Length: 236
Image 1 (cartoon, helix red, strand yellow):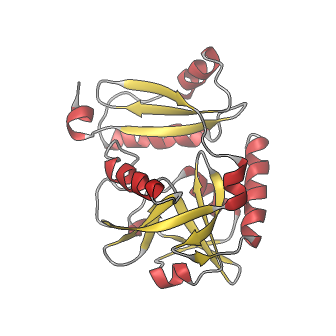
Image 2: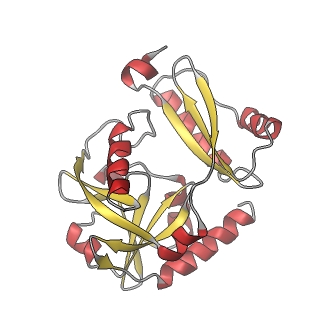
């Protein structure tokens, strides 16, 4: 028992493992950066994670690494996303909860995740796949479990980090591999966009088909997803 239990002072990473762990170096680098900045203790070594994966012969699973002051927890779960999810795309709602762009912890993947989970459970009960947050200034931030991108006139945009969001590993891959403009995005800009897609380490890239009954296309997204899938299947 430590401050991870009492105050949520802890961090985690969720890593996709196919035949190999995807973006393992990036995940461990972000995890260790958080451990240092939140003063949680000893760093995590890639070699130890690989040893755990090999020892338990983990393939086509999600590996979660949780770190608190006194605990290091490895947990494994199934990947829930199916081919049908990618074919249909996600139906998305807009949360009534506002993100705090001045929060000291929003950019860390901390154990203070309950608000995300509650909103995610609410959207699931409403037959939605995800819910997205705006901040107190009315700017788009992120989803409960995802980062968000919009496409307008073939230009890709994503909310800037200063809006109050967790910058994901796949988000950064998109930024590194495509021309992406990071900016403040209003609700009007979101709903008037041509295409919308979401990213996280497990879902990869998935199109949004519907936000509050507004339908979206997916022409450019299909090309982005194809390139992403090719990259991770090649072990990049």
